[in-house]
Image 1 (cartoon, rainbow, N blue to C red):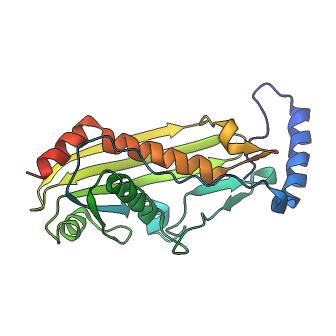
Image 2: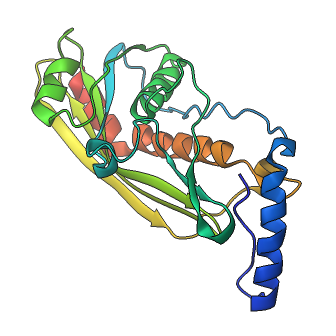
Image 3: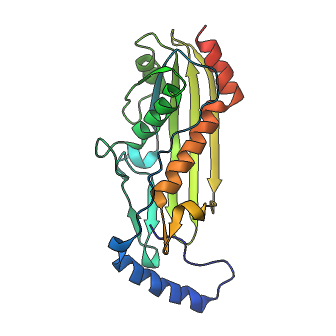
Length: 232
């Protein structure tokens, strides 16, 4: 969980000193501080949606080719840049990243009184089959497609994402699709929440980031207009 070691203005000698410190810290990983759990529930401010089906389909190439497991979110780098994939604790165990996002959307909308059904889709399910599965119960639907999402934590916190969000009528008509994509080469972190005793809370940082992204998706004016139309 320790990723930020140096600032841009530090000397090369300090870099090596810090790397030595990092190696020592890694041996003390069991002593890492306990951070407050971050629920990461997005904030939905739109009109109440009576019924909605929600699904997230993972289209990341490293998932489809089997290089990474469906739960994969990103990597942290230990000494000398050696990458490690950390798995978020979840219930059920090994919950996919796609399902994690769908359940957060469900929690948000249920908090506003909506009846939300989460539909599980296998990674790589094509758009037509995804739409068919979503509207099988006769509900309007929200489909999130993960084209890319991956963080890389070492000397800085890099996060790159690319999502497509679609709104679908209960009859299967695709009403609207919008892309949300960005590449943070050095993402800002609230150190008052996510830093303690030389360690950063990588999972807390990203739980909050995913919540912020889903909040952006759900409260986008065009997405909300499409959701209102989908119920008619």
